[in-house]
Image 1 (tube, helix red, strand yellow):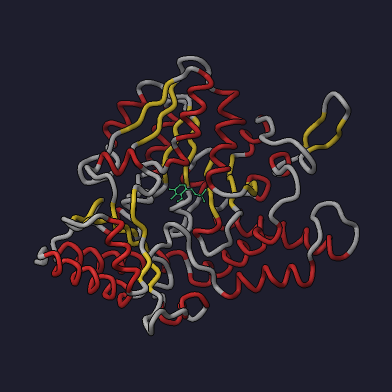
Image 2 (cartoon, rainbow, N blue to C red):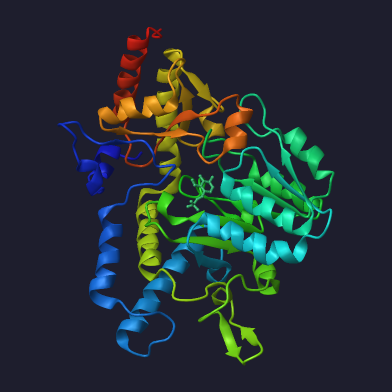
Length: 408
Ligand SMILES: Cc1ncc(COP(=O)(O)O)c(C=O)c1O
């Protein structure tokens, strides 16, 4: 089991106190904190080896290239893929836009169907909206159940429309819902669709094996998995990536350039135009080392334990909790509301006690609205959170309820 009190010590920001109160960080679904090892690996790179990658013939550049490519290998192993199938991007949003532009523009034609779901973050919705608008195609969304899980019957019914592309999330950033990806990929493939998975919220919290899950593409973002901001990745099956045109043009992504035309570099470089985020990739590699040392099974178990603790405490006190109640069906995220209080007020009350949560529509307006709300408060957990963090939050929320006369 993870000893979160011990883990906390690796995260310098968590030692920051406000009026003597420790920092309770419950917003890792927005962005996780960074351990000292990640911060140091990036600063060491700048202090000792900074230079550009893939072009210098001197020691520092060779070392920078080695570190950058080593991180790619670590990420590929982490998801059970091959390094040439792992393209570094800025974040999950860029990865999804890459697929929508490069593959989508080739694949989708007038009246074609793209299938997504009501569970999606705007990043896995808007790129498909733009694609169908460009192509005069159709975007269809599978519904959710009242409990906030994916309605599999509706998903299968919508597959009858023979979508050419299916875009689904590995984990909802609002309810923590974990759709049965393996089954959905299998069903979508039976209809001949390409499957794009948004892994932004799932990859940091559980073991993900792209080979056994079978998706064609998966978007990853580094800053939610202990890595720095500005670095993410796109996993893509080699057979797709090889046949897709580049997304951005420029240096490093070419093999030979003439005035009128060029040929493209091998994978994954064909999709990495320009100087990449070298320090970011190195930091992400160190974050993966950190997660591997903890063990992804342990990470998942730890978050399940925290969710159960939080769910019990919030529902006992009469708060509205959204999404599945079974920890096996969801990640360590709990979205809730308190009658008579806007979620922004909940977040402000908690902030007075140095407790950070997120409030609002969580960049998933269709989902929040489908659950009958316009805004929600959300606490999300990670490896450094303790049951005491949750107790601190519950104490502050109970106090707010008492002032409002809504306590149970
Ligand atoms: C489910 C999900 N998908 C995609 C994203 C976008 O991630 P990024 O902003 O790092 O591109 C987020 C970010 O909150 C998310 O929660």
